[in-house]
Length: 265
Image (cartoon, rainbow, N blue to C red; front, side, top):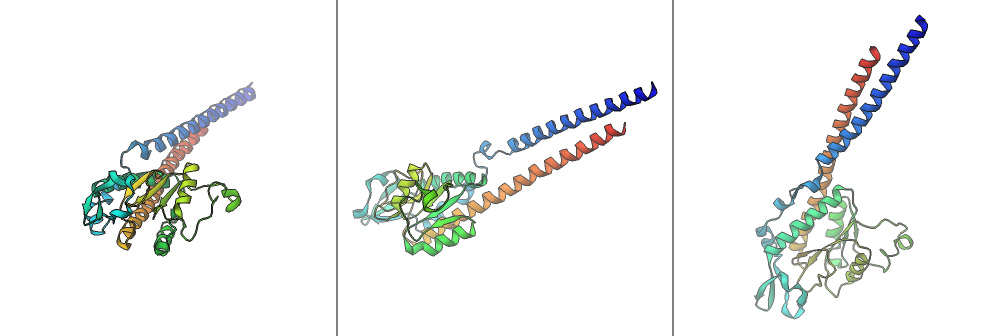
């Protein structure tokens, strides 16, 4: 009888311990889910603080407000034009600030979720600058040429089915070859962040940013903002990932203590 009682008691302890461990793991999964949900960037209107990175005076000093001669004007850019001065259109920088903040916020969320960013331009003047920003931010670029089908037939053209999650496009004049890439990206539902000068067609650009795309100062400013935004989002992602891991480790430690306590009984 004593042996049977001991076996029954041992079986009961093992059953309680297994149930407790299972319950602890369930609690751990719930805790992980709650931690991830508690730091969801979508719950905050400006989780990455991009509004603080855009200043109107900085844009003005970089000559972002300078548009093209009125003879090169695309009427579709009328909503972004402040006025005309000496036959040259002047871009409304108030709208540039607002559009740029929106685009940087979207870019941050995409990068935070490990999305692929593609810098694009077919103008050789900015080849080196764009490549440098893309490399320093750990992303991709196309600057030296565009072949039809790189998006719509990516598995045949470049050997992959993975497309960019967002494109940052420069020099979107109707005379530039990048317009073909914009059309293909739109066909593939790839969002596009584009610098819209007064000679550009903004209709296929998901997040247009009105601004001068013809001077080194202006393009350099935009590239610096994009680069800082990407790196900041990656840094924030690593910080939040560290918080989740610390929470999981704490829960695991509590699990071990509870299991050891039950087993010792």
